[in-house]
Image 1 (cartoon, one colour):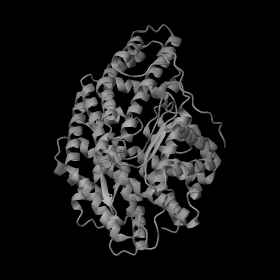
Image 2: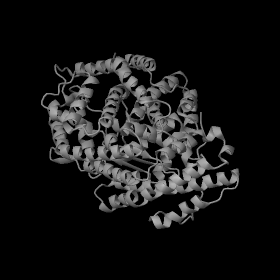
Image 3: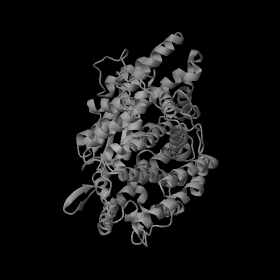
Image 4: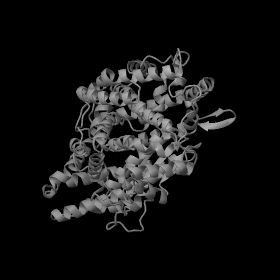
Length: 576
């Protein structure tokens, strides 16, 4: 199946001047004021008003995104951090009262009933929720929390270790943990853990401030705790925290045993009597770590080839981003950790940020973020910006499915068939192992925010209890107990985007279901995939997943079915 590709065109401006750019609130406010005061006389007038509001939202969103992109690309540049902080402190807080008034204007409009209720249902539902949650006294608190959260990236970006006389970022250093030299792995792991522990107290202090602010925000909005508030703010209409708890138990029952077999399999391959923390990604003596690429340029070039084999539309997305300079792929000092695809609402061509260091994990990240990018391209032509603000449960389905779809074409990165099989096995191992980790992080978050005022000692004690619950029990952490207590600090989501993590679990199950569909009929699976992503958020999650040809859910029975399928896939690789 081929779908015609055309480079996205920036949404034409009809409300703001073409030359307008966001500089300060004084220049922006008149547009919000005009929308607030405009008289709407009929249904066409309401639709026109919605288009103008959407245009304004797209311009402001893209400006904010570029500020964040530039700051994460270089955390050492004070001017870039200042520009982002200025938006968070001086512009965004002033937008929120207007956003509330505009939401009320829409909800109170007698012409609202004339809108296509099927098309507008998810959007109007979100507008109603946002209006209910709005509290003027939370505006400043939310701004403070956003600014504080960015300190995590700055702190993490400064972390580095010296190995054999050369300085490496933490992402670059991690590739040494894949080597067959066990003494070197232990040395590198020790240096990395010691470096992280240097910031342990500072990270705890930062997190305590965030917890306090978030709890205050929840209380202001009439919620007992931030967990309950955040579920409402995230628009989780299709599941509850009780469903999350059921997911935790299902992972423990069906997935953890499979993960345990994989860890035992690696232990036996390594010929170890005792598995240590630096052995989890290692290869046996005489086996070199996979080296799928050397530079960011090579990673992109080969990724384009992989995407082209899957569907030319996908490779055209990457090529367009490359031509427009919408990528920053290689790890370097001063760059924030992690990876992301940032949609850019007005121009329609997103930006991929990552920290590539030449590992197989980087290839998977590129496939993942490439899936997000394809989602951005497919949904760009939807009429309103709000229609493109799809929930993470479908966004992550797009990215995680792309990882699995592309596996059969990873030969582009490897000349040796055995290396290709190793790479595919690594992906399957990662897919299985990530589910217990997702359950760990999610269960930890529920406790963090339903136990406000807890101490650092209590937090670490609960973390260890949950980590133990979802661990295989095979790895010996002796001598690294203190580091293990603070292992949660590696998870940027806890600091920057609270409660954004269960989505990965839901989507990972969905991606495995998509891959099962792909194995049965590639053309149908890709058609369903693209149709679902093209809908943006014009349908509820259950319908988006149905369009993709799979079920939305993470009930124990479903988790068991998907785990059985994953086990069969691993058996074909000779693992379990």
